[in-house]
Amino acid sequence: MLKGSRTLDGPLLSTRLHIMTLIGRLSPIFTVIVAVWFIHAVNVTTGGVLYAFGIEPRTLRGLDGVLGAPWLHGDWQHLLSNTAGLAVLGGLICLHSRSTFWRVTLFVTVLAGIATWALARPGLHIGASLLVFGYFGYLIVRGWVERTPMAIVTALMVASLYGGMLYGVLPTRPGVSFEGHLFGAVAGFLAARWRLHLPVNRAT
Image (cartoon, rainbow, N blue to C red):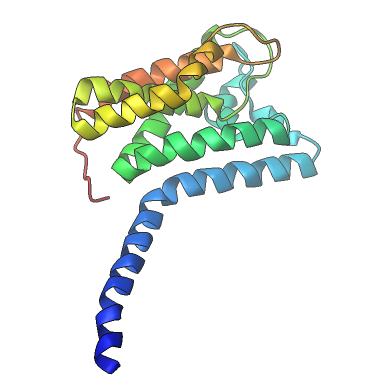
């Protein structure tokens, strides 16, 4: 019995290590999701004072929104709908590389944020959908430029599951920042090519 117990320790330990490794790889997107929920809770509690950090196109105060807008949401439904996209698409990037995830996130946030500030309609532009569309664009184009089996399979899976998102870059719904969606997707496209010029540690 003692010998059998030691035999079981190997598979159990291996499974536990795999689970811990998976959690470690996904920790960046967990951090982002916890952050946006916490920020929204604070914003609701304080009566929406954090909306001052949204993007207001072509205004000096709106420049704060370049970095702040993706962390803010109009209501709980808005936040919930973006959380699913963040978890799936952001998680896929994290599984490839945590460092790549952070580079893509920063690149999309800054580039799409500046483009939205400079070119979008007047109003308050907020929401993590800018990042969701950025992750979508990145994963699709990465499959085309990298052309490894894993990148291609991931791109095809994302296209089949989330291809309908592309309608979100059109001005079809009032009150929705299609500009943030559009510029987020474009930034993601560019990030896929930009990533290829950086060293990627696949073990991180």
